[in-house]
Image 1 (cartoon, rainbow, N blue to C red):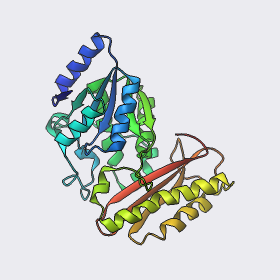
Image 2: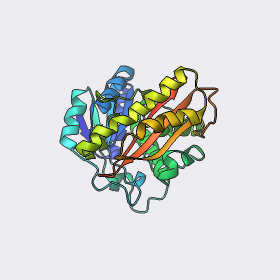
Image 3: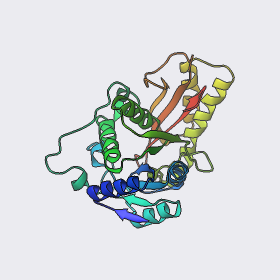
Image 4: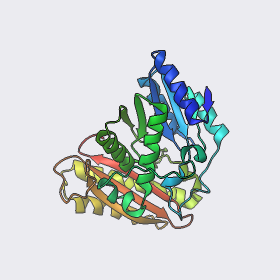
Length: 285
């Protein structure tokens, strides 16, 4: 497996692969790889000849009071995990190369970023869209693979690709979960033992909504109430939002006449860790 840190070297390597007739898939990550990331790399391997995994803790998607400084960065362990999953190239640029002095160009996907996480993390998706487009430009993948756990991120990137005519196919892979249902996340390592036990209520809440939907419930308020009722049993979780939203616009819907996204964000009370999860009601992602 190759490790590349310079964007120009990565771009030239991609050109070399292309001239040899080999296709590239990209798995963008911020490192701290877990089994969810491994599944994305495995999925990427199914689509293309060469798998590139980017490891870059993107500073511009963190707010001033968020966890950029303490975000886990176990680089050697990450490289071993990526290689074990079948990755061919790890692209790990430095911030100064991605955002050189005087950097002033950003991608702002409007409308769908005003809801859910976008409402509580101003500028977050501007940072996400910018770095993803830069990664597309450097790596030139035919396919990029993202995890459905970050549902709004997936929808934002899908809109950006559509609006900017990006020449990349998108694959959104299912969320990988712990045995108790908690969605795998690099931030799970922050949780105290008590918080970790109660974090399972997030998925239980989603399951309650899925069950109510399957029984014929179409009122968003009722489905939100089912989730809230479950989460009320987790004293260490503070709800940031429980929403039922349109799969295209991400706007809240009062009644479900088409597939919709049930989305949850909570913050734990001891370690102040932010956790998100979601489920599609009435369809697939």
